[in-house]
Image (cartoon, rainbow, N blue to C red; front, side, top):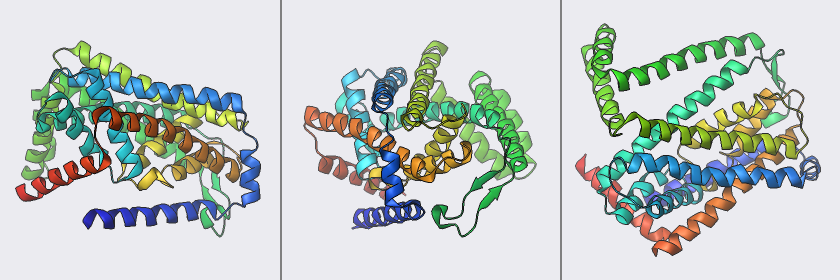
Length: 357
């Protein structure tokens, strides 16, 4: 019953997001934008998307094998099952499906599978920080950002002064550099970071200091799963290569519609999209996938047509959906599982967690 309510809410949110997205554009304009598609560029855009699936698994190889022996097949299929569940059901249930499937396919304890999945999320987070850092440093518009009247139902043009954008970017860059530096220091010298954290947080509250130090200890314990810095470096390298594929795909998608764009535009798209899809998702990521792409394009590309933005978002969504369905279906057939089996497994994990609480 609880899951049914969540799905109904997700479908409702998806419908609202698409209504908000489409209310400012006519079907005739949208059809005209879709007719601009250059099929050569669109076909090229599929290459980095499909490549990212395999690079992502190779990244995870160095994380999982540092903890427990596992076959490439087990890691590939557990990941594809997670993507399929995230994409079809939503609610980020894939974050439970992935370790659940890996524990079954590789005879790893569920607790250990959850730990390596969390460590892989840290890898993703670090790569996202790098992408954001490049994006906010590069995004220095020479004009105010404007969302025209009619966009998303706006009654009048919304203007964001360029000074606000530049100041916000500089503040974000400083913050991200501090975060990255802190992560490196935690790995390199845990005791030093604990002393610094305890001293700074202790000014405000002893409980806050204790909590912050506990988080650092847990994070450091996860990072030191790697037997050597070489494995961590390789994992991060494949992670960055995965994100590079994402960025390249949006370069090619923009060219698919013949849009002139500044080089940093794909970074802005990927930053907003990365944040949006990391939240508990709606079924099919309908709207949740499209809206950040449209907003990013309107922000980063001067005078771009709203219909072109929406058409690009639709094409990108479909392009990402196809390999997820193909690989996910293969994983289900190869392992003799079903979405019902996975759903029951997730419900069991959630019930056990509720009981423990």
